[in-house]
Image 1 (cartoon, rainbow, N blue to C red):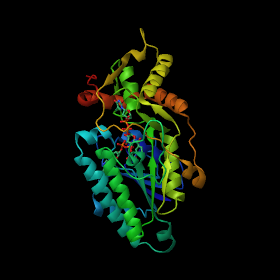
Image 2: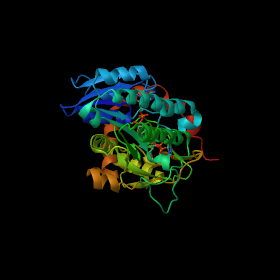
Image 3: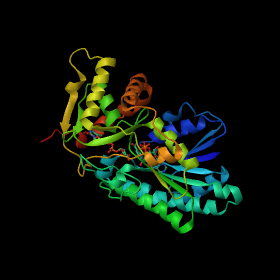
Image 4: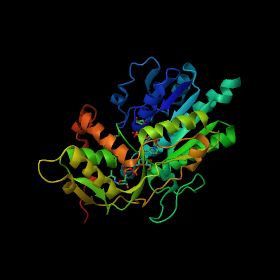
Length: 355
Ligand code: NAD
Ligand code: DAU
């Protein structure tokens, strides 16, 4: 099967490329613009594989995407390219509108033209899989509620609003033009190769460097965590076996408060890498809250379990331990990022102490 993966140099996209390329019957074309979040080092293990091709391109360049679809006789598009970090969307929403909304529109335009030119079984089998987020559903109370595929959209942040808009465009291309799309909405991912601006890798690396581990507000906000390789398996299933026009929620059934997450990171590090004096817990620092901070996300993943037979293989505890060990053993991957004064760049928003 010929896959075209957008955003394959990012955190989840690289896990998808590694998974798909492990099967010799697949060919993967990875189309990525290489923004600050794109990193070819994450693809080192498959970079020379005969069934893998990298193309640096913008999803907004519809003529180039159309040419790639034809050249590589694409069967399935898995669309992950996006601006993905909520705090950056608050600081500067423009890139989120450009890539997540306009970029997805351009990609749909190229995909529709390509699909219309296909014939017979290849036309029937073509899929456009749009990878989205649980953040489109908005804010849940701490003590009740869960997101199903029928939960109304109520995005809070510019990031979430841009993803919601792109979901609506994808569904409209199905209803109006018949493009065979599938969608998935996933909860918070964590694992190897995640850019260290997100809570878990930031917490691990700041701890290892003896820097404050920033916790927004009181750390009471709840996220539902999923190990990235479990998400990649789910995406492969949705892309290849999902029903056109349908959406699938994906989650780890692992709700944890942010404070619990950072305390668990500190517990694991105290065991794996004890400090000469004191505990990593001493580094936990409460800072100014994120504006519009959604209290809680929780995913009902029953549909993908029932219809496609997917379930996560890692618990939060086993996945977190694997993740922390990976960051300890793979400084070749994160040293160049941290060396670029990344930590300083975000200090303004994330590590102001609570007033
Ligand atoms: P990421 O920020 O790590 O990677 C995004 C990738 O997209 C990067 O490689 C970047 O270079 C590329 N990209 C950005 N703009 C582009 C453009 N215009 N053209 C081509 N490539 C471009 O993101 P991630 O965390 O891997 O998330 C991937 C997708 O999954 C996103 O659509 C995100 O909304 C969604 N998602 C993420 C999570 C999560 O917890 N990280 C959860 C649910 C859904
Ligand atoms: O729910 C899925 C979403 O998960 C994806 O769509 C997004 O692309 C992805 O970035 C992630 O969004 P979050 O905002 O939930 O992830 P982040 O790691 O930024 O934050 C997780 C929680 O931790 C959130 O409640 C904010 C909090 N936080 C975050 C950072 C960076 C802190 O307390 N301190 C921090 O320094």
